[in-house]
Image (cartoon, rainbow, N blue to C red):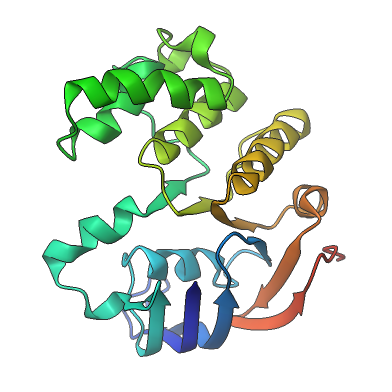
Length: 232
Protein backbone atom coordinates (compact mmCIF):
# COMPACT_ATOMS: atom_id res chain seq x y z
CA UNK A 1 0.00 0.00 0.00
CA UNK A 2 1.15 3.53 -0.86
CA UNK A 3 -0.05 6.37 1.35
CA UNK A 4 0.43 10.12 1.03
CA UNK A 5 -0.68 11.70 4.30
CA UNK A 6 -1.19 15.47 3.91
CA UNK A 7 2.03 15.79 1.88
CA UNK A 8 3.27 19.26 0.95
CA UNK A 9 6.49 19.98 -0.93
CA UNK A 10 7.83 23.53 -1.11
CA UNK A 11 10.94 24.88 -2.80
CA UNK A 12 12.14 28.07 -1.16
CA UNK A 13 14.12 29.83 -3.84
CA UNK A 14 16.05 26.73 -4.93
CA UNK A 15 13.60 25.87 -7.70
CA UNK A 16 14.79 26.61 -11.28
CA UNK A 17 12.31 29.48 -11.41
CA UNK A 18 14.19 31.05 -8.48
CA UNK A 19 10.91 31.71 -6.70
CA UNK A 20 9.25 30.05 -3.73
CA UNK A 21 7.25 27.23 -5.26
CA UNK A 22 4.76 24.72 -3.87
CA UNK A 23 5.04 21.56 -5.97
CA UNK A 24 2.61 19.51 -3.83
CA UNK A 25 -0.15 20.95 -1.68
CA UNK A 26 -1.58 18.77 1.13
CA UNK A 27 -1.81 15.59 -0.96
CA UNK A 28 -3.90 12.80 0.55
CA UNK A 29 -3.82 9.60 -1.48
CA UNK A 30 -3.97 5.83 -1.04
CA UNK A 31 -2.98 3.31 -3.71
CA UNK A 32 -3.72 -0.33 -2.93
CA UNK A 33 -1.46 -3.25 -3.75
CA UNK A 34 -2.03 -4.42 -7.32
CA UNK A 35 -3.74 -1.25 -8.56
CA UNK A 36 -3.01 0.45 -11.88
CA UNK A 37 -3.30 4.19 -11.30
CA UNK A 38 -2.82 6.92 -13.89
CA UNK A 39 -1.85 10.36 -12.59
CA UNK A 40 -2.59 13.04 -15.12
CA UNK A 41 -2.39 16.79 -15.43
CA UNK A 42 -0.45 19.52 -17.25
CA UNK A 43 3.28 20.11 -17.00
CA UNK A 44 4.07 21.47 -13.55
CA UNK A 45 1.03 19.86 -11.92
CA UNK A 46 3.23 17.89 -9.49
CA UNK A 47 3.12 14.42 -11.08
CA UNK A 48 6.87 13.83 -11.21
CA UNK A 49 7.40 15.25 -7.73
CA UNK A 50 4.80 12.79 -6.43
CA UNK A 51 6.68 9.85 -7.95
CA UNK A 52 10.05 11.09 -6.71
CA UNK A 53 8.67 11.05 -3.16
CA UNK A 54 8.21 7.27 -3.42
CA UNK A 55 11.89 6.59 -4.16
CA UNK A 56 13.07 9.38 -1.86
CA UNK A 57 14.54 11.55 -4.56
CA UNK A 58 12.44 14.20 -2.83
CA UNK A 59 11.18 14.42 0.76
CA UNK A 60 8.08 16.22 2.05
CA UNK A 61 8.19 19.65 3.59
CA UNK A 62 5.16 18.52 5.57
CA UNK A 63 3.28 15.24 5.90
CA UNK A 64 4.41 11.66 5.37
CA UNK A 65 4.84 9.19 2.52
CA UNK A 66 4.48 5.51 3.39
CA UNK A 67 5.30 2.47 1.26
CA UNK A 68 4.23 -0.80 2.90
CA UNK A 69 4.00 0.99 6.26
CA UNK A 70 7.57 2.30 5.92
CA UNK A 71 7.92 6.06 6.46
CA UNK A 72 10.06 6.86 3.42
CA UNK A 73 11.50 10.19 4.60
CA UNK A 74 12.66 8.63 7.88
CA UNK A 75 14.80 5.93 6.26
CA UNK A 76 18.54 5.99 6.92
CA UNK A 77 20.63 6.62 3.79
CA UNK A 78 21.78 3.00 3.84
CA UNK A 79 18.18 1.77 3.78
CA UNK A 80 17.16 3.71 0.66
CA UNK A 81 18.65 1.19 -1.83
CA UNK A 82 16.51 -1.54 -0.25
CA UNK A 83 13.42 0.59 -0.79
CA UNK A 84 14.36 1.27 -4.40
CA UNK A 85 14.76 -2.43 -5.14
CA UNK A 86 11.04 -2.77 -4.38
CA UNK A 87 10.25 -0.03 -6.89
CA UNK A 88 11.02 -0.16 -10.60
CA UNK A 89 11.22 3.15 -12.48
CA UNK A 90 10.70 3.97 -16.16
CA UNK A 91 11.37 7.38 -17.68
CA UNK A 92 10.56 9.26 -20.87
CA UNK A 93 14.18 9.33 -22.05
CA UNK A 94 14.93 5.59 -21.50
CA UNK A 95 18.31 6.19 -19.75
CA UNK A 96 19.97 3.24 -21.48
CA UNK A 97 23.77 2.91 -21.51
CA UNK A 98 24.84 3.44 -25.14
CA UNK A 99 27.95 1.24 -24.91
CA UNK A 100 26.04 -1.81 -23.68
CA UNK A 101 23.73 -4.18 -25.56
CA UNK A 102 20.08 -4.57 -24.61
CA UNK A 103 20.93 -7.66 -22.58
CA UNK A 104 23.87 -5.93 -20.90
CA UNK A 105 21.72 -2.93 -19.97
CA UNK A 106 19.29 -5.21 -18.16
CA UNK A 107 22.10 -7.25 -16.58
CA UNK A 108 23.81 -4.10 -15.32
CA UNK A 109 20.85 -3.37 -13.05
CA UNK A 110 21.57 -6.67 -11.29
CA UNK A 111 25.35 -6.30 -11.34
CA UNK A 112 25.29 -3.02 -9.41
CA UNK A 113 23.46 -4.70 -6.52
CA UNK A 114 25.85 -7.63 -6.42
CA UNK A 115 23.67 -10.34 -7.94
CA UNK A 116 25.38 -13.66 -8.61
CA UNK A 117 26.35 -14.37 -12.25
CA UNK A 118 24.08 -17.43 -12.26
CA UNK A 119 21.09 -15.29 -11.27
CA UNK A 120 21.88 -12.72 -13.96
CA UNK A 121 22.28 -15.44 -16.61
CA UNK A 122 18.91 -16.90 -15.61
CA UNK A 123 16.86 -13.73 -15.03
CA UNK A 124 17.87 -11.50 -17.96
CA UNK A 125 16.55 -13.78 -20.76
CA UNK A 126 13.33 -14.30 -18.81
CA UNK A 127 12.59 -10.60 -18.46
CA UNK A 128 13.53 -9.91 -22.09
CA UNK A 129 11.00 -12.58 -23.07
CA UNK A 130 8.30 -10.90 -20.97
CA UNK A 131 8.75 -7.61 -22.86
CA UNK A 132 9.06 -9.34 -26.23
CA UNK A 133 12.69 -8.34 -26.84
CA UNK A 134 14.57 -11.63 -26.64
CA UNK A 135 15.48 -11.37 -30.34
CA UNK A 136 17.09 -7.94 -29.77
CA UNK A 137 19.25 -9.00 -26.81
CA UNK A 138 22.54 -8.31 -28.63
CA UNK A 139 21.50 -5.02 -30.19
CA UNK A 140 22.92 -1.73 -28.94
CA UNK A 141 20.53 1.18 -28.17
CA UNK A 142 21.36 2.97 -31.44
CA UNK A 143 20.11 -0.13 -33.28
CA UNK A 144 16.70 -0.02 -31.57
CA UNK A 145 13.57 1.99 -32.28
CA UNK A 146 12.09 4.26 -29.61
CA UNK A 147 9.49 1.68 -28.69
CA UNK A 148 12.14 -1.04 -28.45
CA UNK A 149 14.31 1.14 -26.22
CA UNK A 150 11.40 1.67 -23.88
CA UNK A 151 10.76 -2.08 -23.74
CA UNK A 152 14.38 -2.61 -22.70
CA UNK A 153 13.98 0.12 -20.09
CA UNK A 154 10.89 -1.70 -18.78
CA UNK A 155 12.82 -4.98 -18.70
CA UNK A 156 15.57 -3.30 -16.70
CA UNK A 157 12.98 -1.99 -14.23
CA UNK A 158 11.39 -5.43 -13.91
CA UNK A 159 14.52 -7.52 -13.42
CA UNK A 160 14.48 -6.89 -9.65
CA UNK A 161 10.92 -8.25 -9.51
CA UNK A 162 9.66 -4.97 -8.02
CA UNK A 163 6.41 -4.78 -6.13
CA UNK A 164 5.73 -1.30 -7.54
CA UNK A 165 6.45 0.07 -11.02
CA UNK A 166 6.60 3.84 -11.54
CA UNK A 167 6.29 5.11 -15.11
CA UNK A 168 6.98 8.83 -15.55
CA UNK A 169 5.76 9.92 -19.02
CA UNK A 170 6.99 6.60 -20.50
CA UNK A 171 5.34 7.28 -23.87
CA UNK A 172 6.40 10.92 -24.18
CA UNK A 173 8.98 10.24 -26.91
CA UNK A 174 6.94 7.62 -28.77
CA UNK A 175 4.47 7.72 -31.61
CA UNK A 176 0.92 6.67 -30.82
CA UNK A 177 1.31 3.06 -32.03
CA UNK A 178 4.40 2.44 -29.89
CA UNK A 179 2.76 4.28 -26.99
CA UNK A 180 -0.18 1.85 -27.09
CA UNK A 181 2.25 -1.10 -27.17
CA UNK A 182 3.97 0.19 -24.03
CA UNK A 183 0.62 0.68 -22.28
CA UNK A 184 -0.43 -2.89 -23.19
CA UNK A 185 2.84 -4.12 -21.69
CA UNK A 186 2.33 -2.13 -18.48
CA UNK A 187 -1.20 -3.53 -18.23
CA UNK A 188 0.16 -7.07 -18.67
CA UNK A 189 2.73 -6.44 -15.91
CA UNK A 190 -0.05 -5.17 -13.64
CA UNK A 191 -1.97 -8.40 -14.25
CA UNK A 192 1.00 -10.27 -12.73
CA UNK A 193 0.23 -8.40 -9.48
CA UNK A 194 2.63 -5.46 -9.75
CA UNK A 195 1.28 -2.09 -8.65
CA UNK A 196 1.67 0.36 -11.55
CA UNK A 197 1.66 4.15 -11.15
CA UNK A 198 1.68 5.95 -14.49
CA UNK A 199 2.24 9.71 -14.77
CA UNK A 200 1.16 11.18 -18.09
CA UNK A 201 -0.41 14.20 -19.72
CA UNK A 202 -1.47 12.18 -22.78
CA UNK A 203 -5.26 11.76 -22.90
CA UNK A 204 -5.23 8.91 -25.42
CA UNK A 205 -2.70 6.91 -23.43
CA UNK A 206 -4.59 7.28 -20.15
CA UNK A 207 -7.94 6.47 -21.74
CA UNK A 208 -6.42 3.30 -23.23
CA UNK A 209 -5.66 2.05 -19.73
CA UNK A 210 -9.25 2.46 -18.52
CA UNK A 211 -8.35 2.19 -14.82
CA UNK A 212 -8.30 4.61 -11.91
CA UNK A 213 -7.40 8.17 -12.94
CA UNK A 214 -6.13 10.85 -10.54
CA UNK A 215 -6.10 14.39 -11.93
CA UNK A 216 -3.60 16.92 -10.56
CA UNK A 217 -3.33 20.65 -11.07
CA UNK A 218 -1.03 23.15 -9.37
CA UNK A 219 0.16 20.59 -6.85
CA UNK A 220 -3.30 19.44 -5.78
CA UNK A 221 -5.47 16.42 -6.51
CA UNK A 222 -8.57 17.84 -8.15
CA UNK A 223 -10.27 14.59 -9.18
CA UNK A 224 -10.02 10.88 -8.37
CA UNK A 225 -12.04 8.59 -10.65
CA UNK A 226 -12.35 4.82 -10.52
CA UNK A 227 -11.99 3.45 -14.05
CA UNK A 228 -12.32 6.98 -15.33
CA UNK A 229 -11.64 8.68 -18.60
CA UNK A 230 -9.34 11.67 -18.86
CA UNK A 231 -11.39 14.36 -20.54
CA UNK A 232 -9.92 17.79 -21.26
